[in-house]
Image (cartoon, rainbow, N blue to C red; front, top):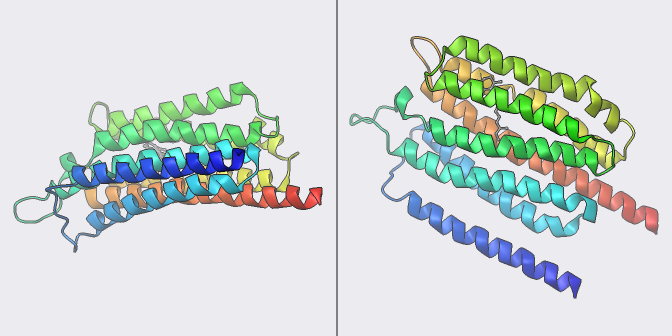
Length: 272
Ligand SMILES: *C/C=C(C)/C=C/C=C(C)/C=C/C1=C(C)CCCC1(C)C
């Protein structure tokens, strides 16, 4: 009974996702992609990856132990929200070729769409991090709020700098400082101490997340930096942001899924 209800829920979720895909297609109408434009291609690849990951995480949610289900849901939300924004971002990019076919200038980056997406998905990932620690009862709510606060400072500084509301370099410095604080908190602070005492699956998830926050997130400030100065490289900025999003959302979700699967198998064999 419960099983069949779960199956029904996941089929409904899948149908919902696919209907959203139709909406996304409508949103893309009128935009022709220049297939020799690698930045444009990266927008399209990222869009497809986000949708595929979302469907995968929703379906795989049924195969993991109960305590991992919320983590899988959050992973699906992150890629789902990103997929939704990517359908618009790729259109924005494809619509902004100059008449001579040259690539868009700085003003044509999907800046606002990107930061709206990050403003939703980054706190979701911080929540994910917290959830994995909380699943074993070792994380405090304060840890969540500290990471949440620091990620907001990072994103707001980045937005003000990129949008030209504040000088680029000082904003980059503030953003990097907030990110450095997150790295410290994860490798040396409360989070680290909590994770040392838990199951193999949780430890794997924790290490994966610490790496994502340190190495995966490092791609963003590099992209930002290349987009600054008198001769900003708008193509490099966008292609790096797109790669970073796939790494930090899809690969990150896959690691959570892997940890969840590992932990589920371990507890199943312990019961036998
Ligand atoms: C799914 C989206 C994610 C994980 C976005 C992450 C964004 C960052 C880690 C951005 C970092 C930045 C800095 C560290 C310095 C200032 C500029 C930013 C906002 C690009």
